Amino acid sequence: MRKAIITVWSVALLAGSAGAALLVEEQFDYGIGSASSTWNGGTGFSSSAWSPGTTGTTLDNGLSLGNMQVAGGSAHIQFTAGSAFSAGTMGRQFNNAGASSGDLWMAYLLQFDTTRSTIPLDEALEVRPGAGDIRTKIDENSSAIGVRYGSAWSSAVDSSVKDGTTLLFVSKFPDLGSATGSSARGWGMTAAEYDSMIANGGVSEANLDSYAGIQLTKAFSANETMAGNVSMQLVPIGRNSSTPSFYIDELRLGTTVNDVVAIPEPATMGLVALFGGGLVLLRRKFAM
Image (tube, rainbow, N blue to C red; front, side, top):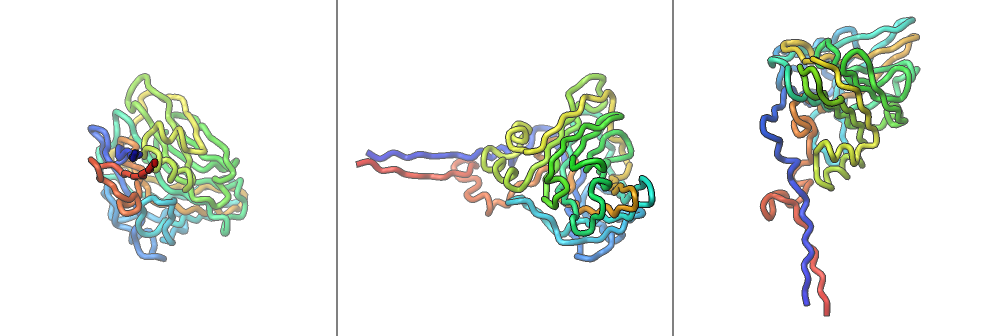
């Protein structure tokens, strides 16, 4: 007797839901060592390039995360704080009409620069799609990632946030413009966690809950929106003469999780689309 055992990996990760839209994408695919004033690629922007602000930002080697498909370099954001709490901002204006309803998702790769950091617990980086109350960050008071939806932050502490580990940080801001709605969410994933998610059903909110080692929830904030024609802001923050230094890469804003989380290249995933669009592993077991 011969028995065939077939395992199919779903390719739902390759298809977004109806109405999905990628609003902004920046892979920092520029020349190594170039200044931010020359970074004029990406999608979803109206200004020709990133403004350097008061940061010392250059293009460095790209970040990677397991089998994730990535491109180009990464923005190396550096800043020298004053004697007290201080911040610098680099930004680039969106060309979209904003997000006034539905869900807003954001994702990026992030790595704390342990080589140039001087006082890690005094150093932070905020990522702001506009100047409002929709934000994410690495915290200046701890090794934590945070999500802000409204006037307050929710944070989750993990040593990997400031030990030089490259993390995928994903956040969801639901029910924009509504009087009532669901809580905002945040997830931090290592390379191993990302690869496990891809191998076990792909990119989905449920799988983020299953595989992300860092998770946080922020209570719903009524009537929040992302205004149109505002700047995507990358804001290093420091105090006590610290030198905040971070790498950021693969920055995306969209309306679904599939818009913002990159997946492996087809060659890496193996036999994608075989047997109706799935990755199929066939093992045959023979019995006498």
